[in-house]
Image 1 (cartoon, rainbow, N blue to C red):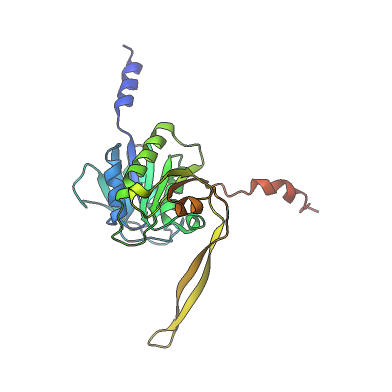
Image 2: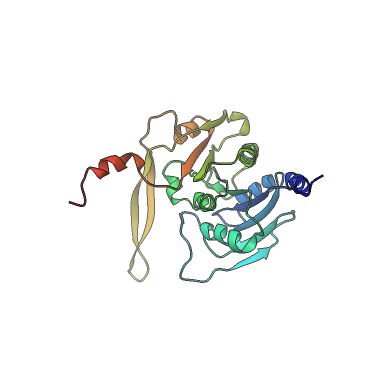
Length: 269
């Protein structure tokens, strides 16, 4: 047997390396569920924020120091690191400093709350997945439509495992990551998985203005989510109709369809 054949067989039997992160913090029930599922699929390393980082988008830490320390949250074969930074920081630090090889998969979540439609723009969960995608790592963000801390993630487990296994087997194209949202219903009421597009929707926002005891104004952001899309191929439609939505998203924000028209503007004249 040739030496190259031996190496090939060793690589075939090696477990995939899976990086797990989130934006709700390393102690959140959602990430604990995700870790338990990923432990059945490969060797798991967790690098997650030490405190909640929801709504951070793709923020990174530039003007302060970053810390990461190994922690032991519960029993398990995985290695875990608590990071003082954002979800994107966690992925960057994992790849550059903590892991000894490039992971075969990065999974982020399971988020406490929706990341469908326009929410993907603000999501720390999805930004962590996108950061992994930028590095050429197949990546998935998982979310459950329940914002409570004690959300029941049991119905999510089988769908998380199915989708993660498929991505490990098939890979993803460069520049593409998956955004997966699970409706907050019993597993037996979920109809299946629906491949979808991002719905056209937005938040109609308002600020609740108040005064502190010193008389200084302060604000609480609030708002109402409005779905402006009547299509039956969207993530919002899928979720409203008891499907798990899977949306392939890309981090190339170029509006390619507008380039031809933009060239007619003769901006150099």
